[in-house]
Length: 112
Image (cartoon, rainbow, N blue to C red; front, side, top):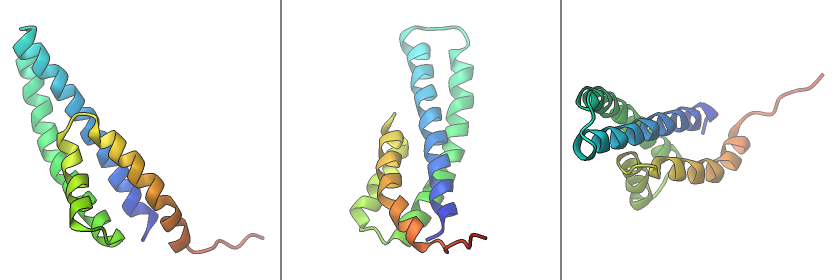
């Protein structure tokens, strides 16, 4: 498995996680605190999160298929982008798990 597969998953996990946390704060501001402008903020962030979550799903599925994960693990990783802060914890666990595997598959570099 290439390192780029893990890297793009990690980037999208962080982007999705940050947007979901921002969306959560926006919803609190809109519905609980009744803040001015929270509705517009929530609309923009929810659209961005929705589109980027699709990209996250594609990259996570690609990573899972190349890592040959069982279906349950694959579903947990895919759903991590829908639970605030879960993407951060799942990404960290997956990264630690796959770093050794990525290092094994990368070609050895020649030193002069």
